[in-house]
Length: 289
Image 1 (tube, rainbow, N blue to C red):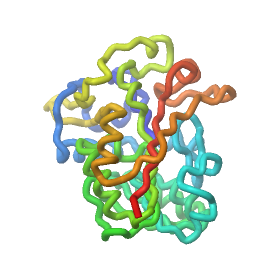
Image 2: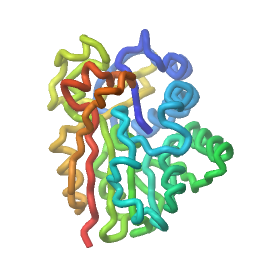
Image 3: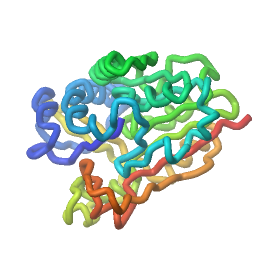
Image 4: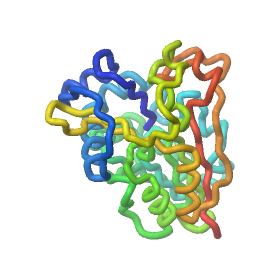
């Protein structure tokens, strides 16, 4: 579920969700897993309709788009050759409206879509009815996966869950647990260096305003100081350490370049910024045999 959340409340493209949740201010600060889960579930439930209205055409109804740089699994094959997908049990973590899962099903895989948000899963069910491509959908968080050990051959996440959880190391441990030996885990997150820059696709977004090493979560709150939106930052080193500590092998880090012919924007992603520094990091991992 690709995110395009912009810092600042006044002119946000997510104004309907912010109004529904009573978002009042930005208050960066420490936040635990339970509070983070509550905020993320409420946010994606409130923003589901607007998010799909704005980005549904780009994401398609049965397509696997890794990132705003328009990298598609059909071209990148980060999950392995097409032949490996046939009959493979695949877990999509943070599936949103399950566009990636439906694409996987079209390749002969046996995907399961997991998401925290009932609002996003409602859209997944609606699109399944429209396309006739039905995949199992599970509402749950990524820090505690409701599946047996070694239940899946592959796992993937296109900006789903990992940037929004307080304990991403727990996600890596859980994914490693449910993967069979030799299974792949590929996940895309905002490139860690993007944390240093304002969420602006234009010139203002080219000036460093925060420390790369500041891991204080970005938090929006209502007038009672309750979190309404949360995003967590980790450095590239943090991401690598989480993978390794979970017993997984890191096989590649993909930093997609902005396509020269691609003139669109996605939140803070834009041709201007994309020509200068990466916006996405995709970590490719494997569970040892």
